[in-house]
Image 1 (tube, each protein chain N blue to C red):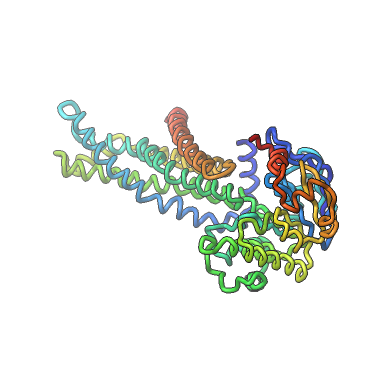
Image 2 (cartoon, rainbow over the protein chains, first blue to last red):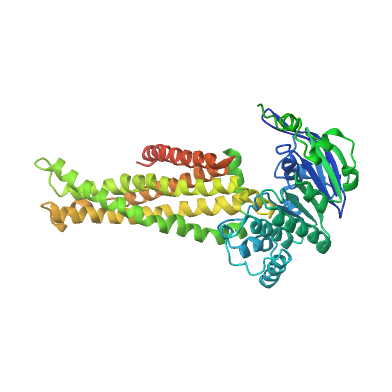
Length: 255
Length: 235
């Protein structure tokens, strides 16, 4: 279980998270919605200790992430797959080595690593790309390799940072299907950060709306679709009126 | 910087991570730097021999050309010119590579895959540079002196025997190890600065450019400071 408790995070004068609280239950896929720059990715990075909260805490499986000793933090990270917005594949390595990297750290035998790599690539329909380099792949393929790299670790949790941003609608739908497939085949708990409503409705068991640094509303897909909250309605319907103001108030843009 | 150095000290224990990566860095940082180091050494040797001859003619016996070429290349120009050139080649390369990895979240990805970026990225580069710079500089010293000798024999009125006589005249083994110690410190400094600047890049291509430029400028300045430091300490 992942619990955010009153998390605050500032970058200089910008107060990005202003008391962000959220519970993510085991086995569910939680979608965090929000405007660009609203702090969704920042929240996600707190879970694996890439960022530490200025105030508040993030608890994963009973441990407070920013208080963990280095060895325990590494053990926690081994339980979590992270799918980065732009895949973050190591560009000096082939697809095979990118997938094998985390497995080698777990000191698995070479045969097991080769089998995991093959299975994981098959799960994202990219069998046969083992010897290619990230630069030789399309954006959608890189994201799928990023997902395969996370899956290969057999994690308990997978965190998806904007998994469909910048992709065409068909490729986005493929990624959505893969997220659902990963959940059903591997039984992982997922957190998906996105501002793509189709992704949110397709993959989410519950949806949380991050607005002005806090959770504005959290509920099932149906509850969010029927919401009467003006800010949430405006976002999910993509209505432009006052949208610029709303986003500027969140991101701190002054124009 | 203090926190960074303590992280490096901690990462040194993680031999399983950096052990296998150091050899490839030794090739990239050391072996691939040999051509530029030798290119510089050849022309330095030529110029030193000719300038020594120009200065000494009519005042000092010409075999002192060998003395000046040997002393100057081993004590100063071999290590320092090679260091400055490698501050550009190696320091800029490390800063640009690590900076790009930082801004494209590859460093974050390593962390989520349970790797310590210091063990994985920094230690192999720093070890490789510290170990390989003396090797590269030793080759540069040999080629520089040989170049000076060939110049003296072919362009000046000097025989091999006279050149070697001058070369041996004030030679001490300290001349060589002093240059090699200096070059090891240059390798350590250039690689550490490149790593720190690269990993400190924040956002975008501009940040990578700033990190790269900063790494070269700071490394070049520190080489000159270290050069003076070693002269004060060891000569």
